[in-house]
Each structure stands twice: as structure tokens, then as C-alpha cells.
Image (cartoon, rainbow, N blue to C red; front, side, top):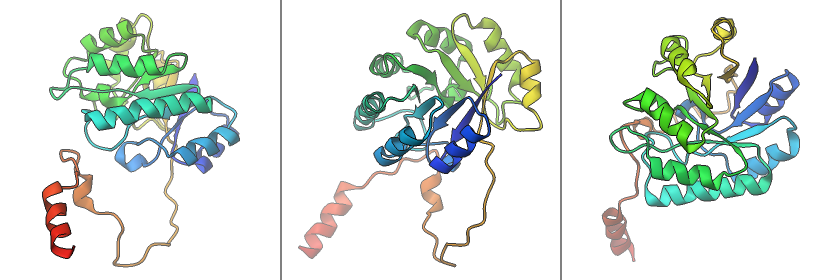
Length: 240
């Protein structure tokens, strides 16, 4: 069974390689579901890790319906990953009604030509997963990462097994809550790869008490954060 580790730092990636993992999905901010790493982080991990590394291309947290500006950046991120010699891309785009954005996903796959393409857990939001499986296979996606549309892959194993049975040229990779206690369940169910972080929390104590740098309202998945031009204009006019 192939073990893919979702690594959120170079330290995590080094630990994964030393421990015998087969592949890394590299991203930042696991608590947000993962976002694209910076150029500096990408270049650094490429220089230090020898096992295959697939890069998450997701410009922000929240939904999977992206603006034109965001999508342009996604294409350029893939271009950069190819230039740096990465092995695969993990990405995908949905429409506003939770169906697969065929046109944009096809453009991502085209830009990633020559690299392995995994459609990420946006799959767990689609309204018709069996239809989207067929659509992704037609587009040439090699792998789908999914929790079976449940909070954990263990809870979603029935759908995951159905998808595996239906798939003809696309691997189904369980991910979401896969851990030491349940990984054999997926192996015994016939899956040949799993995705997990194996992450633990380490108390570092470097924060300033009563002065947090995170802002919880900005973590709401149903909302999108955008600087407001009218407010900026008012402030500019007030001080200039």
C-alpha cells in the first residue's frame, strides 16, 4: 500500500521521508484544509526531498469556486511547479452549484501535462460523485482524493468502495481521518493508497498572551474575504 503524507512544512516532509513514506503532498495550513506553499517553500523542499512530491494548488481556504484572478494564479502556480521539477499537482475547481467545473479543471490538467494530477477533496462537495468520477476519468485525472463525502474516510468507506469499483483508470485515494488505528481497514478493503498527515500538536509557547494573530471570523468557510474599494477610497480621501 502506498502511503502519501500531507506535509505542511519541510520538517514534516523530512520526517515523512525518513519514516518510509512513499510520497508527499505538500501544502501549508492544514487547519484550513491546505493552501498552496510559497515559492521559497517550494524551492526549498525540492532541494531537500528525494521521494515524489505533489503540490497542492489552492489559492485560499473556503469554497472551490475561484475568481478569474485566482484561477490565473493557479495556472501560474502549476507552471512554476513544473519548472521546479515536482512530480504532481493536487487541485480542482467546482461551479457555484457544486458540480465539476469541466472547462477550468481541464485547463488545470492541460497546464499540468506531464505531471500526475490528483483531484482534491473538492470532490467531497460535489452533488453527484458518480457522475463526477466519470467526468474526471474522461479528463484524464489519475487520482481522486476523497473522504467519501463524510467527515472521515472511515465514515465514507462505503462510497469510497463504490467509487473504487466503478473507476476504470483513476485511483481512489481515501483521505481524511486516516490514522494508525484504522489504516488497515482501508488496506483490507482493497485500496492501494491512503492519504494522511500523521500530525501531532507541539506546544511551542511563542505566542503573546491575549494578543492573537488569527481572526476567527475570517475562517468562516461560507464567506470570502475581499478588500473593499469603497472603504479604501474613503480612508485615502480622509488622510490625503
